[in-house]
Image (cartoon, rainbow, N blue to C red):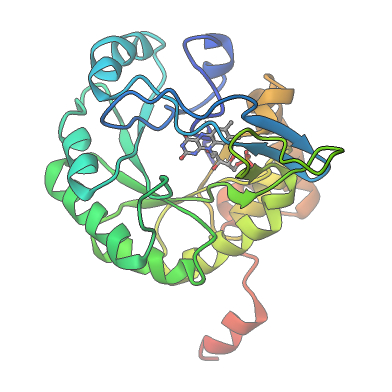
Amino acid sequence: MRILNASGCLDALAAPDVARQLDVFVTKTVTPLPREGSAPPRIAETAHGMLNAIGLANPGRERFLAEHLPRLCELGIPLWVSVGGFSADDYAEMCSRLPPEEVEAAELNLSCPNVDEAADSAAEIVAACRHATELPLYAKLSAAHPDVAEVAQAVAAAGADGLSLINTLRGVALDGLLRPVLARGRGGLSGPSLKPLALHAVSVCHEATGLPIVGMGGIQTGRDALEFAACGALDAALGTVLFADPGAPARVRQELAAACAAAGVASPEDARGLAKSPETERKVPA
Ligand SMILES: Cc1cc2nc3c(=O)[nH]c(=O)nc-3n(C[C@H](O)[C@H](O)[C@H](O)COP(=O)(O)O)c2cc1C
């Protein structure tokens, strides 16, 4: 099981020592044009997790490719680029510009603002990117869709090589005077409260597609990561935990070994998909 960061949760250029603990570094989502992001405050702590409305702040495609990518390559860590946009062409253009000798995979953020997340449009974006690059494509899906497994099947049929699950889920936090804490009002909830929802999404998408899955959503410990493996994830990504514990990648990797021993499995790979639901087992012929 590789340990990645979740997109947008680590600035590898500002914290290279944290990035070097990872097996793969995933960039923040890059959009065609630069984005300032939302007005502050854009992060709020809640009793149930973190709420953010960063608004996809990023330098934009041209500056990312010319300035950020060469510096990220110097870190010597396998690199995935998170791609965002507002049309299938936006995504495909960025994918076509990613140099395969520098970038290991593209993660398509299919949960961008203003991008319809319906199964068809997710599949359309993946198909456009499939034509644009031979790089492995990971489709990052949101668990807000009523049937995430259906979206997963659609993107698999369109040529996705893997899935990244899950993105934040929309939420609101209020202050003492009942005003939204975030300037933008609404934001994306992340952290431990996402874990059961993320495990569900990983489990149904694993059963529906069998694709490699990067599991994320509230992972804080090695045991959490092992639970994602048991639900079908091949790899694990750390997001919100990195803000509180920059040593989390090395710690989680160490804890994984002990978590495997405690659960009676040899490795996370051996645990993969063990947590089948009784519903699924009934469907399997005896
Ligand atoms: C501050 C912040 C910024 C994020 N930015 C992005 C982003 O640019 N692209 C993306 O696909 N996901 C983004 N995410 C979502 C994370 O990659 C991850 O899917 C989510 O936070 C769930 O994992 P966690 O509970 O471990 O944080 C962001 C999350 C946070 C907290």
